[in-house]
Amino acid sequence: MIDHTGVKVSDVKTARAFYDQALAPLGYQVLRVIPPEVNEGRMVLGYGVPPKPDFWVGEGPVNVPPIHVAFRADNRQAVDAFYQAALAAGGRDNGPPGPRPHYHANYYGAFVFDPDGHVIEAVFHGG
Image (cartoon, rainbow, N blue to C red):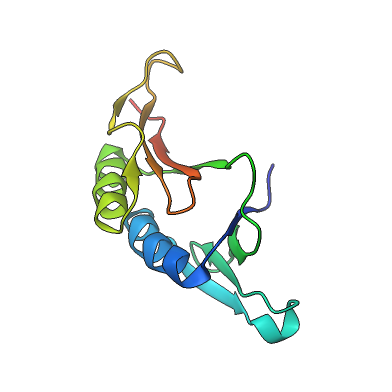
């Protein structure tokens, strides 16, 4: 089981504006802020569903190639809401909400690019 993961971003303020809005429909919020004073001059944000952060957004050289992170959604409506929120927050389309039967029969996902080009996905695996 994966405990946590994350991405490096070029501008943590821009990234926060995007992720705060895009991940809200999935119940994610900033749960921890590691200030630059204790992290070699770079801010890090810990996102998660309370009480524990499991997705970290850190200021620094952007990952090359960009990272793909998929967030589990509770239903199709949450996938749809994620997609709309992510686009409204400045994300770019990389696949609108819909079934992806080539992954498996009940796969329903949506894909966006974050401001640094990382592929961020919400997926529901139910029927």
